[in-house]
Length: 342
Image (cartoon, rainbow, N blue to C red):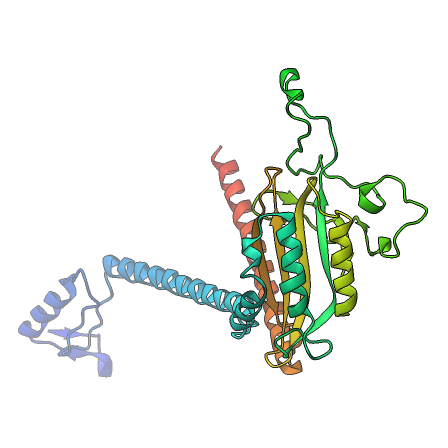
């Protein structure tokens, strides 16, 4: 059989070859781009094959989007861990342990006001002021500034006992609260007027309205960042005279609800500052509850490390902004979707 007209473009096919060609053209494979290596005739892909390829491409795009989100989240998580733990000094545990073993063993056994003064005279002061001037007793940690003793008090109020019990209950004190905290100015032995012949140590304590920016929580209550404060100075002799004066003038009495001892040391060997806060609390029953808070902080850093962490924090903040914008866009899309459906 002859095809293609006249001349060079025409070609002849036998009946067998024409039958094979007709068979190939009429074939419709369903799941692949079908071709025959023995023929040069192209077979177009079927509709089902094209749809399968489109679905595969859509799945690949989703897969790449999920992988991208996972990688972004991993980078963000790595930055967060670096900021949270990268600047911590592994020696902080050992410094806290050393300070804790030095000051707190008998501190946790304090149950009365007299026990506190005995602990302050026999353990606190000897360990705060060591053999080397400016150092605590371990000889390695420098005492920064003046240690201080702070107390928070409640107001003197009439006892709310029943009439039949007032003859038995002579006085009673309320637990600590912001409303009941005493913030008045007093003279020696908590008198309202300063006597003419006041002691030369009467100036050592006074009410300070803002010792901390925020209130702080301990075992029994949430305390305001204020209180009556006695600075112990940087000399052991002065500190001993101040503690003795506080004991003799009944500075701590039945209206005291919290006693806080604070001091800060710096250990150059491990480049750490340790802020120590030792607290005694009572709710008026009589016994004290002791707690200790030690915070070791590395404030002095190498310049290169400081610049590195600054760059990490900047990148972290950019991630925060990115996530905020992303959440806003998602919220807008959902709002628009709900508006169109309604």
